[in-house]
Amino acid sequence: MSHDLWEQAKTLFAGGVNSPVRAGVKPFPFYTKSGKGPYLITEDSQRLIDYVLGYGPLILGHAHPKVIEAVKEQIDEGWLYGTPSKTEVELAKLIIKYVPSAEKVRFVNSGTEATMTALRISRGYTGRDKILKFDGNYHGAHDYVLIDAGSAATEFGVPFSQGIPKEVVSTVVICPYNDLECSEKALRRGDIASVIVEPVMGNMGVIPPKDGFLKGLRELTKEHGTLLIFDEVITGFRLGLGGAQSYFKVIPDLTTLGKIIGGGFPIGAICGKREVMDSLTPSGRVFNAGTFNANPISMSAGIATIRELESGNVYVKTEKAATELAEEIDKAIRIPHVVNRVYNFFQFFLGVDRVENAADARKAKRELYVRAHEKLLKSGVFIPPSQFEALFTSSEHNDDIVNESISKFKSVLEDLV
Ligand SMILES: Cc1ncc(COP(=O)(O)O)c(C=O)c1O
Ligand SMILES: NCC(=O)CCC(=O)O
Image (spheres, protein in one colour):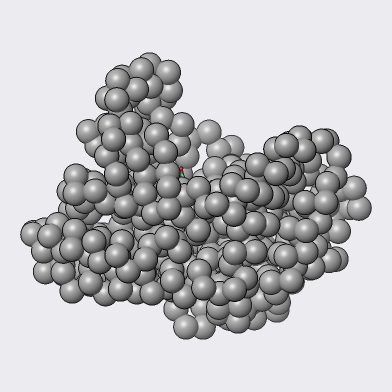
């Protein structure tokens, strides 16, 4: 039972968990026994419709047969070689085919490693030390980006983590999201190696870029000899095969990927212009390495996932599900609120009438959101336990699942005051 496991876990792990957001499920986290299609099955035998989907990777739902088949085939051949394998060539070719900015790729094992490496490349390539990031953007859990970070860092009151050397802090410039003026002022000084941005902010809830924001960043960075990094760990292969850069038609110098490209197995990737990517060792002098880089299991799961995405059906289904849910949620809530949706992921904010940056998101009534999360969980629907995450849909969220979800959302949200 979840309760027994939680009692043990509290003695084994800091705060009882291995990633903080999981402790947001009250009064204690449920423990998952299995995942199938749109569902999680808990150790208490509760079946939940899942809108968390592993925090984004599972665009095909849980335990998709094509991914199972690919991973099983690979396991039979061994799973770690310490040499290159053909799986990495195949996955890189798919990424280069679809992601406009990608001419070369380096595979790593998490989004955190991807952004850490992309920032290092930008410093090595330009010879500059500083980076610009946006308030509330979350780029993983390394030193350079745990300053004004969203996601669990904000949820747990540490947007600025302890333990970051002040020398590092002095190299990070922060601007509000959607604020081009601040970015222009910072870039004019000519000492910024790169601007890193979530092209859709998915870590303070969901916050779309304003018209012209991404294009403005592209023009400004070009003008000032600064690299533009799109952190597409969430949006890559979610907003279509070409991610946010195709969706918004703005092409960065470097892109970080993760989540979907590993089909739910650990992965990260940096990709971008040939000349910039060649800064990496062994061709260049910016170091990156990893025992598990391009491991054949993650590669195989990623290939199988992208192959499923190629027909386009998954995008039609996920967009339809997210649109219907977001519209019905919008209608059901009777207090001031905002529902921000971009294509196939979204979040709702209570007690506010606009959310365009992190400061707006922080004003939302989080206690009401958490209450909605708890009631939904009781009724069999799992949404993120934190206001500062996103609801995702998968191809398994068919009309029946969506209709069942809508009636549950309605009965919870209509009563919120
Ligand atoms: C935009 C973005 N970048 C980076 C990361 C870090 O990825 P990982 O958790 O795989 O380290 C995340 C994680 O959610 C993310 O949403
Ligand atoms: N939006 C942040 C994440 O998806 C990371 C998951 C986690 O913190 O466990």
